[in-house]
Length: 448
Image (cartoon, rainbow, N blue to C red):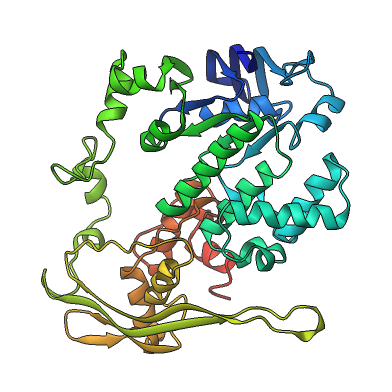
């Protein structure tokens, strides 16, 4: 069986001043036609760098690259050396014969272009379809990747979709031109298990129909076991193990691969306990009494009570002044969270998990129902909080967003991001963060 992609002794380094950080160190593997090869490893092992190198997306002028990357068009004698491609080669390849489903849909999808327009542009650029034929093809692909109403989704913008729906749109953009090779960079990370199964089945169906080859970048061994034919395990830019999926998952040869498999969460057996081995008490003590101070009821007593909470959204008006139906995001939810409890909020994409969480945070206000929190002295209504009480509440209730790329400010360093809330609350003295507390707060418009 012919190989669609061959990577031979690929080395990639990123320059920072006079220093060069080696990301990939002599990586070699092949992707056979019609097969799935999974790249597995921890964050920072170089998996996504391989995908960017194949697509020619590494930053020019800041990258040192060596080795060969060869793409072979299935059923043809054409062979393209992607180590030294021409602009014409990539104009024909990208999105048409080789497609990349990015890990961060919020970064990859344009906020000012609707999903349907984006996919139609792919088709009309590469396959010269008419507008009507392209639209039919787009709606068909949106339906196949799991959009509940593909015709309505055609006119939606990325910011109007949930995180899971944006991930499905990213998959649709990679598949719409029926490429020979798809590089899928964590394509199911934001999908619920039912839609994840649907997306994986879609990829499997396309492999059967078209002989599609798939380079699947993931850290999820459950996905690897279901989709991969071959597995390549990366660590610090080196291939530490590769072989068939059965060989690697049932009889791994390297200690690293065995450690990765042992770390996979399981539903049965002992519960998972978070006990980081490298945590130091000094780092916690550095935060002083703010970190250790306990506010709220004793363990086991109600901390948050949610009673009959509902939230609905009205979609924006379309051309001609016709308004779409109201979206019922949350309908009559009741929930109690006791102090010291860990409660799992589970459901399919778009079922209202994030909306309910944002109402608890007071980022959204419920249309009906009540949300109350116990501050240790009694229950307070969260929607009615204001002023100092609201500030103290938001200091105690924190939100870890689904998409870090969209939630972290790219103009701020890691130190500035972490110290900003402490400075805002007056919990500590600034050193270099934002050039001082008043400058930081003035920059964001919190003080005059």
